[in-house]
Image 1 (cartoon, rainbow, N blue to C red):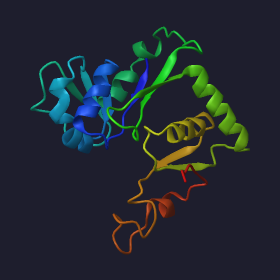
Image 2: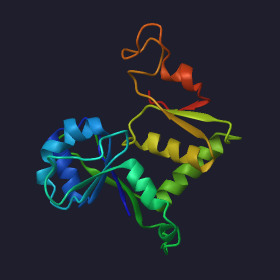
Image 3: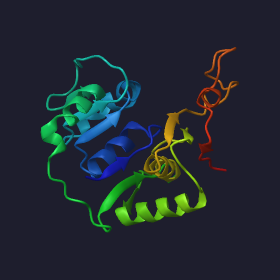
Image 4: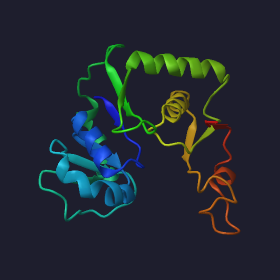
Length: 201
């Protein structure tokens, strides 16, 4: 299975282009992004079959095109926990197999998909891990870049590989003074007290 990442800030036509170009059949998203970014373009994505909503959400989803099932993350986790699914045969990927198709955000025109192999991912993770000594389950990583950014994806994968806790944030909630933090409330970095964070200049 290949992971496809798209920035939520892309317009509807650009998102539909990426989903169609890669023939996406499953989407993981939040309720907010489903309602504000995806719902209007779903009819333009004929191969899409399943949408998994990761946050707390209703158990039924009226008003979606026929042929598309919307699921809550809890239902997917329950399905994955069934004993018959744990014992299924898995075919490990080759290093040359495509692991991720990551769509650009800053290019002109329609976004372009960058193909990243499993070998590329492992090489990047190995390089990162070598530069962060003694990374372990006592560390907390705070993720605030979009997962569509290669640095964020790599940093989170390194953290998971070493048993780190991962907490999620955004530029609007990162600090106590961030724009979406109520006066007197704590920002994500104060609450999570991270030992690691990836940032771009």
